[in-house]
Length: 114
Image (cartoon, rainbow, N blue to C red; front, side):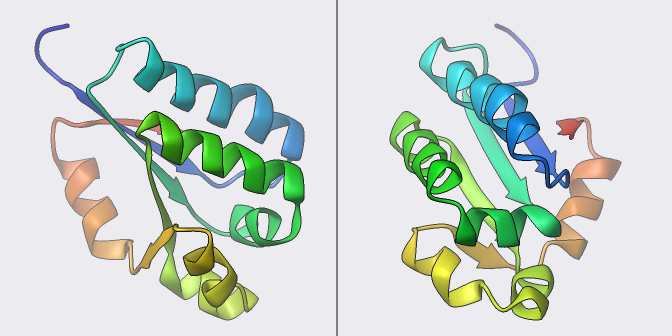
């Protein structure tokens, strides 16, 4: 593929079926099949708690990391939900995403919001 090669997935939906059947299915396959050179999954809001508490979602995060997906979570959300330490132990980057997300939105990068 030419042109844009970095996909950002903004995951805000707390439904585990949506996580499995869209967020992770597309994100992982995007890397494994070479549809995108880079994939960044941004965990924002309820999915932070879902990720910290559900073993099935934790396994999907491990699969995504193994496939080369960069997994990152909103620090403000993780702190407020009390899951920052758990996410960090899962090798999820935890950082403040307000300014970086604004830069993505103002750029020509591709953002998929779920």
